[in-house]
Amino acid sequence: MTAEFPAARPRRLRRTPAMRRMVTSTRLHPAELIMPAFVKEGIAEPQQVGSMPGVVQHTRDSLRKAVHEAAEAGVGGVMLFGIPAVKDSRGSAADDPEGITQRALRDVVAEVGDALVVMADTCLDEVTDHGHCGILTPEGEVDNDATLERYVSMAVAQARAGSQMISPSGMMDGQVGAIRAGLDAAGFSQVPIMAYAAKYASAFFGPFREAVETPKDFGDRKAYQQDPAGPRGEALREVRLDLAEGADIVMVKPALAYLDILREVRDTVEVPVAAYQVSGEYAMIEAAAANGWIDRDRAIMESLVAIRRAGADLILTYWATEVARRI
Image (cartoon, rainbow, N blue to C red):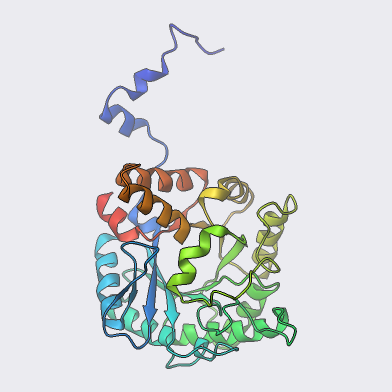
């Protein structure tokens, strides 16, 4: 039996900053944060992403500086997205040893070594001229199994370039198992896989597509990314399949609109769970703050605490370095 008012006064534990700090149960740590970073081939200066204030398409040199700063702040990892000068239908730059992603991986590893975990997105949307995450059939559909072959080649190329984790995000059936087998066969059995296990066909990805220069007429990804209102239990089924295929970490993407899914996944699995605070989440807070409608710093921290509280062990966020310095 618990006490009731007036004996029970929950406000007692909220009265002072020291009291609130002592009893808090949700804490952020810099090592839990992963910084997504865009690097573009063939540019001389960093290019501002219009819909993401403060985020740029890096040059190789500016990327080195950014990851050095992230490492100094204690950020846990960096996720690279390479944008090649030339894109084609099969994403040839994806597994080219001299492709922008592989060169950037070598640059970053040389800059920071093991100070943070260096990884890159293992998907084709940044490198294909049609903007989809896989190889297209003549009818324009994504060919799941042909795409797996490209993912394996891409993953091995990234591992050879120094990627310390492979991160398949295309939501192809069987992608984790195919990549695990390919990495093991190529001598990279020690490289872990962070699977984008529950990734939704979300409107919150819009600014990202500007950042990686996805064609505006690419269509949609509803045939392979999950429906936000899809079958009950679908996310957990995807997560279980990825774990059975060898995933070491599983991810929910986006984060804030899917905190319920994040909690379900955290309560179900025994591996680390990541969540991606995506470009639209970032852009909304930045835009509202720029208009004076919300307190920017408080909104950033509140959004990250919510993601952490819902069960994320790792958070991909474009504010990673800024927040790491603050906490």
